[in-house]
Length: 332
Image (tube, rainbow, N blue to C red; front, side, top):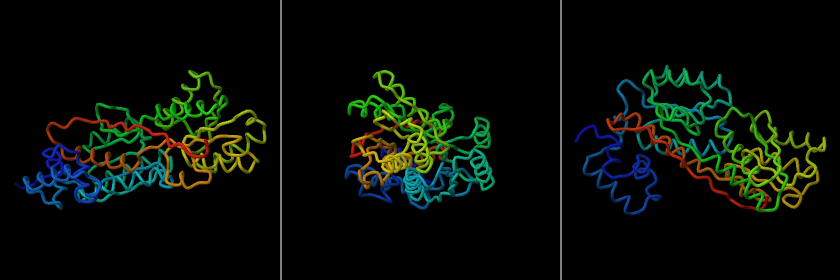
């Protein structure tokens, strides 16, 4: 058989495109039975690895565009690695754009991707307008959204149940006996952050806990640290015994400022973050955090994009929802 694509191998083996990619790149992560099913499918179809990009539409490059919010955030670093794992297995390269939370930069990168005729685009997460997404779709450019569930009928997406993650964080603090909690977040424009903050605030209301929301200019350790310093100087921290930060970088800034103000973690103030970046477990005290499986999310996003580019007649948009997991450590 000629012109066999990675999607056909996945369909015959009854696995995802990402699993076929792992067969070639990381076979050690697959169960023996799965390895055998993929091997048999590869043999039966006569699949040759370097022809995987034939699944892509004629006239497109062998590159995909990936936009991330902040490459300095380890969550996105791991997500990028997951995307590249699957892309490499399909004979593709990844062109990366770092938007730095700027909608203008995101729009500029998308224009560049269109000029380069990339085979598809992954937006992680998307701040672009509906009109910009419609432009991509009208031009026939496949799109996968990460942490953005809008327009579910038109796009594949990958997300974490962030509302549940926020609830889990607040419930954990309440179980530890906390009744006055500071919830710290950056700007409200990012959908998944709104969901996790809403989940935390909803849980606080239902549990009869006083939760105060404080927003910073950016989702950074420096901004969180400055916010705590201001609140400490003004007396707004009095009586607060726990802080839930919207991501782990903010949690690091919170801890720095609290320690410098003479407060002990967790004896005086408990702190919980979100993302479970690699540094979280290495801190002293180690950071309690809500884990997002970022690498797996990246692999799934690229797998979905390969399905989109393959244009199989029975393809339907899929939406993969991952469950957050609480990692309890010393800061709570």
